[in-house]
Image 1 (cartoon, rainbow, N blue to C red):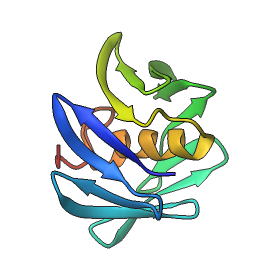
Image 2: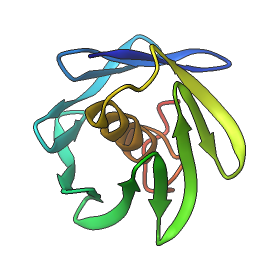
Image 3: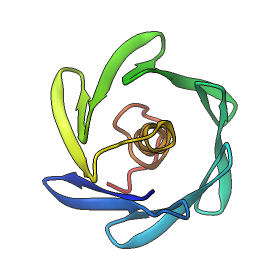
Image 4: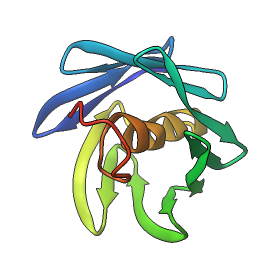
Length: 122
């Protein structure tokens, strides 16, 4: 299932086929456990762990987001919280583990919200 991502206004979208758009531009896609950004494989899931460019970026534990061993945020339905504040939301709500994995990868790879090594498409 796809979802739209809002932060202030509509920031981006993850389509049901796994394509990632930010501000109307296709910036990457998800293929199985792999995360591609601008045509390059930048991320890969090993179980609940997300690796970005060969380094463990973080992991999901239920609705909670961990980076560098610390809980950095969580998902509450469609709301996304980072460092104690509401970062934005998705529509529809994140209803599956796959959706949560896609949103976590979005925050780690396609923005600099959780990792300074991320891209600054947002």
